[in-house]
Length: 107
Length: 123
Image (tube, rainbow over the protein chains, first blue to last red):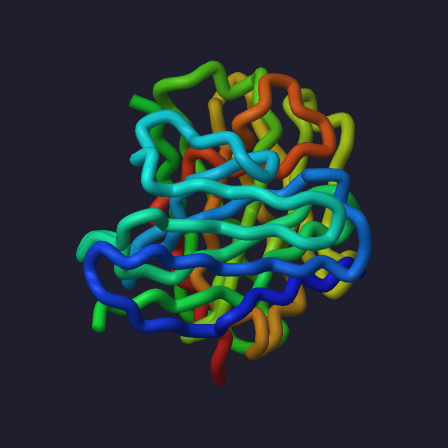
């Protein structure tokens, strides 16, 4: 199985800060990497697909990058509504796997 | 508006069975792969199963094989998950989700999610 390891597990930042989350895969996932946002009590929401493609309607402050086994997710200017848990997910191999999540809070 | 509505969750004893349903609307259901993802209380997301648009290809998480069965009825625009021999560690919110990619076989890009249905396995 491909393990997806996110870091940090949680972070606290100020409004307007640049926030970056990393996701490391245990093998090359050929850019089959997505990012989701989950707010408390809600279903996840697709933000970024295939490493760097912004889903329709998602604010441009969200972006993704990376390749091979190392990927990043960035919020360029953290907003109060961005408080959530963020997950990476690969679909290169079965079983499909998610990272353990990164909780983002406002300082 | 694309929408998915799950139903069928509830409290069941260990060893029991449940059938989850997911009703789709607002998109051409028969042209997209569909998926189940679950989330145990306080835990992260776990992929459960996927089925391609025609139902020809089906995939399961290894830990679930033989106990869970995914199926779909394109005429009824519905997705199902039959869960047998349930265990306490199957307790979770179960989400139905649509794949973003048209006819995407082997894809898992989940662009539409239901609100989830809660399954509790307890004696």
